[in-house]
Amino acid sequence: MMMDHRFQPLAYSDESAENQAVQRWRADFPILETNVHGKPLVYLDNAATTQKPLAVIEAENLYYRHDNANVHRGVHALSQRATDAFEAARLKVQRLINAASPNEIIFVRGTTEAINLVAQSYGRSRFKAGDEIILSRMEHHSNIVPWQILCEQTGASLRIIPINDAGELELEAYEQLLGPRTKLVAVAHVSNALGTINPVRAMINLAHVHGVPVLLDGAQAIAHLPVDVQALDCDFYAFSGHKLYGPTGIGVLYGKTALLDAMPPYQGGGDMIRSVSFDGTTYNTLPHKFEAGTPNIAGVIGLGAAIDYLTGIGFDALIEHELALLTYATQSVIDIPGLRIIGNALEKTGILSFVLDGVHPHDIGTILDRQGVAIRTGHHCTMPLMEHFGVSATARASFALYNTRAEADKLAAAIYQVKEVFGR
Amino acid sequence: MNDLRELYQETIFDHYRQPRNFGRLEGANRRAEGYNPLCGDKVTLYLQVEDGVIKDASFEGSGCAISTASASLMTENIKGKREADALHLLDKFHGLVTGTATADDLGKLAVLAGVREFPQRVKCATLAWHTMQAALANVEEPVTTE
Image (tube, rainbow over all chains, first blue to last red; front, side, top):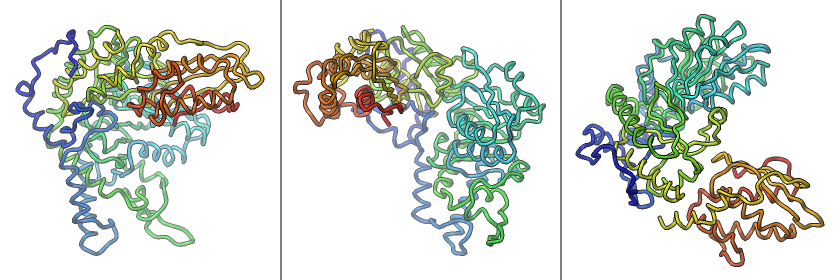
């Protein structure tokens, strides 16, 4: 590997110095053995999707080998086994986020579908012209566009919470936005582009003073923070399985029972009905009312395995590791001339977004890739946020429980190589 | 490292840092916008076409080294060319960066041959060219690389 002479690792970071626990966790992820362009894979694109532990891969494999059947309607043995495994996973989700009831756990394709479900079922049935929905400047497009579609349908409008230069929400401005017209607040628990952890507990309290429900986009929080929906008192919580070391194509919408009960179905079909005749249809009870059609059974079972895996490690251990790693990686790159970190909130998860003078992030991404270092470059589906910082794109390294200080060193060394290629 | 050197040649940096024909073109009678949603690169291309000949060309926008250099080199190259010849050049250039054709008689454009080793970057290299095609066809919708 080209090691720039200017690059000095902050710590002696070989395997013997690494935290033993992290090395054990790494061994659970087969893909981390992969080489890319002849170099060991350094996977730092975890905010896009996380890698999967063997336990998740095996759970899907075993389901298809031994238990595959449709759920909720067979009298035969396999259908019963599939249904039991499917519903057991719902209980695991309930425990993970401390929902009051498993009936509050709706399986969907991902965070995006969860938000669309709330917009089209909750919002469309009750919002009207003059109503307002509060979002923030740092939202992912998936927590913007469903609301824009709803606004077109109902005549409601969006109000946007501004952010400061560190990438934190302006809470005083948020308070000013709340009022009698506000019908819903929808904000990210953690920003995907900046890593900012938003003060959602306080924001929910403020909204509730006005009788306004709050939806949290938990896509970037769920694998990095303990989430207790009852302690937060949020009304809806959305997340995806694949950012939680689980499969793609499976996600969760949590909603309070009273809200979900009052909402019309999102999609019609099998499993969501109690009885159907051409004179009319009665809908099934929660959670099935919102789960039309054959669900992603293997995905749900894989998600259950991912939750078991994560809770086996425990949030205390992984938070300690990820925060230490973020601090280490930040210190490793912060003195690189011309490098500017985008997102310096006091409360952050392991996301390091940056730009480099005179080098477009896309070029950074290509050069890092040739060193085996996988990061994301672009607008991260947050174009309004990029506009705030006056950039069209950033380079983003995002960490997970299996990343190491040695990998942070490789990131820093690869950034020096970018400068060398660009003669800067 | 060698393929990186092959990709990022001095000429590319030169055109990235001092793009030629950069800015709005007074007297342009064709204009088109291109957008690469993958990286957020945007280009606006201006052409002055008379009697089937591209008399002048310029571009505006922000992008990576590859897309900016490619736009700069393209505007240099198509000035004075007949529309049909410019479109023919697009085909040859596309072949060059996708590895299906050689750099024969492409002149300075040959510096972009290194892109063939980086399939994810073909869209960067061809953005301005597809935008030229749209400008010549008078397409009003922005061109995207998706």
